[in-house]
Amino acid sequence: MMRAKGGNLDESSFNLEKKKSMFQNQRMNNLKQYMKGGPPPKEDKTIEETKDEEYLTPFDFITLLRSDPDMADEFCYLNKRDDPYDWKIIDFDKRNPKEYMTISSRGITHFLDDDATFLTIEEWEREVTMYHKLKQIPFFRDYKAWKNFTLWKHLNRRNMMRDRSQLLTQDLFILDKRLNSTLLKIRQICIEEVSQREIF
Picture (cartoon, one colour):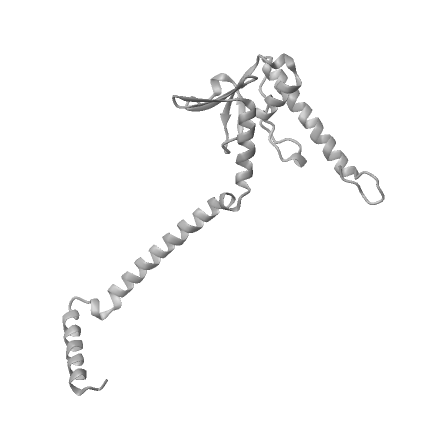
């Protein structure tokens, strides 16, 4: 918790923390209602300060499992979003049949086409932690930008070489089919004259 000068609590920081706490409690209540057959949560943006979307994640379910023993026999289906470890709790009929995940107190099962991979919750949480730590390494963090830049550089170089080749083909006499043999003959004569006169 931040403190202002003089030792008083910063009101804006306190209010933000309070809103975040209320937001997390609301997420837990939404998940409980959803697990009991209630309506799925909306995907509208939440409090502007939190910069989060109001959808339920595996972490919400894990938190609920650890805080409410009555949820031990429940399980959820999840669809993957943009990030490999960013999943959203959904209804069974809305799951992506090609790739989805289930989560329960026993662990997490990832279905990809006809393959299934099982991990305990602790193993999955460790993978998530390692993944986010790897993303902080500059090579992995900047990989997409580097890849796009390298691709742009190679394409730009290829286009430049093509344009220069066309320019030389059009304007360079030595490449002209009608002048080529004559220019080469003149060059040969010049070389012979230079060698005979021993100028160099």
